[in-house]
Image 1: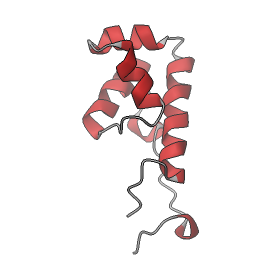
Image 2: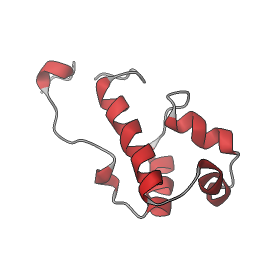
Image 3: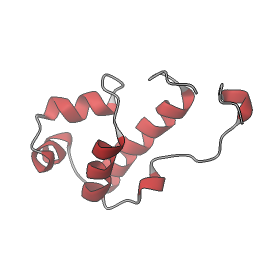
Image 4: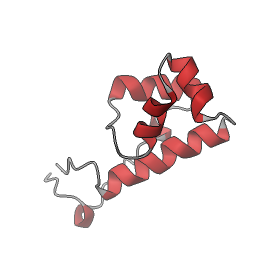
Length: 85
């Protein structure tokens, strides 16, 4: 499984994470306050410096009022991944 934080699939996830925040009309500071985290936490999550786990993603999804599948592309392209069936 492609676990690199720089993978194409993770880049697509990060784009959706930022998009969800923008669609919710929230700043990184506002999100950080809702999470009881510093603004730098949200910045690191959105900019590849910190990998987001499923529990954290659930927190973001609740704040942004998005379903979890909004953030993840379930279509796996065999040419762009090292996953095997």
